[in-house]
Image 1: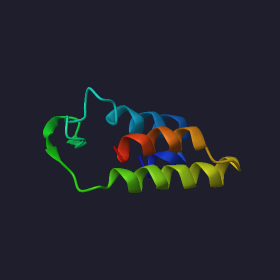
Image 2: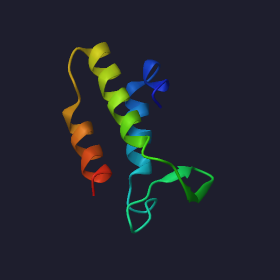
Image 3: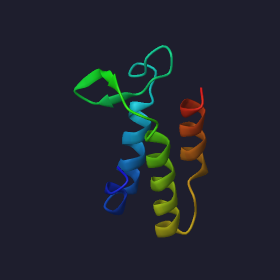
Image 4: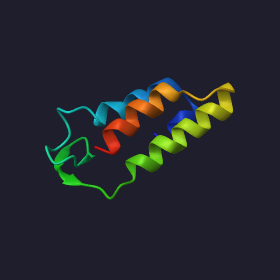
Length: 78
């Protein structure tokens, strides 16, 4: 999504938030690595993707989407 934000920032943000839904996350907070294998986990690259999408969208629109950042942060840090 870090590269897709150049084409459609809204879609990129929605996809990042989608993976952070409780139904996809492991009870211990692990985020799935792939949409086709939810038992594998990644290193914490999701936070990097969220920050990159936020920064690129802010650069493009002139205003940062703090709502997106807050929603993501609450899931990433819990």
